[in-house]
Amino acid sequence: MPQDIATEKVFLNYTQEELDWQYDHSQRFPDTGIFQKERGDASQAARAIVKGLIDVPYGNHEDEVVDIFQAEGKEGGPVVVFFHGGAWTRGSKNGYSFPAAEFVPRGVSWVATEFTKVPQGSLSNQVRQNRDAVAWVYNNAEKYGWNRDQIYIAGHSSGGHMCGMVLVTDWQKAYDLPQNLIKGATAISGMYDLEAVYLSYRNNYLNLSEAEWRENSSILHIPAECDVPLLIGCAEHDTAEFHRQPEEFLKAWQAAGHSGEFIELMDRHHFTGSMCFGEADHPLFQKMCDMIGV
Image (cartoon, rainbow, N blue to C red; front, side):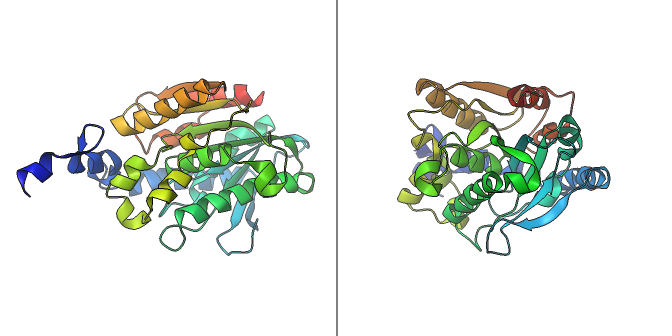
């Protein structure tokens, strides 16, 4: 590679190689299967003790399904809608049942969404599907026993990106639903400005145009009026870019007059951070419970 190309800065102070490294977890974790197994085993254990409704359709496509873990005997209680990660191309809601084991006994229903992965579907379609899922949760509150006025959202990694996009949804315009449909959001290790992603190797499979990365960058669509509290952050051992992304979004969120708090998951890396959603003694879980009021 010619020296001038190798040292050319393509985003902030990163060369192409450096930017790609920031977003390529496989270079630090060549075997993510061990973390998938950890989540899978924990989720299987949770499904054995918490009653769940699996693969409930929220749309017409076969991928448009959710897993529902209802807070029994707590009709009218809050509900958390969770978006899983996986670089928009992999992962499954099946590995994220485990938080239900802690939330459901506290009277909080847990709903994990599924959606069409890239390249079978586009990133914009994935955003649309998760927005549809939250609208479905609102419209089906009476059927499943939660309070439509207590809907919270959460996500990790590319699911954190989904959480950001759902957070900035114009519910009135897009769904004819109340603009304040979301009552709180928790986004961990996500991406909120996709310019860096667009310029990185990830766009080899995302195939985003400039218009599409802008459309799917939640930092560019922060509403002028919003009273939704935001808990946003990353793992201590995430890369610098995965620290910058939530820090910059939080700054923009607060600059718009909205409330938010940064959290760093100490002693965790990108893949172990997601387990904090189901650890009752972890600050992330406790802060979510404080936000929800349980």
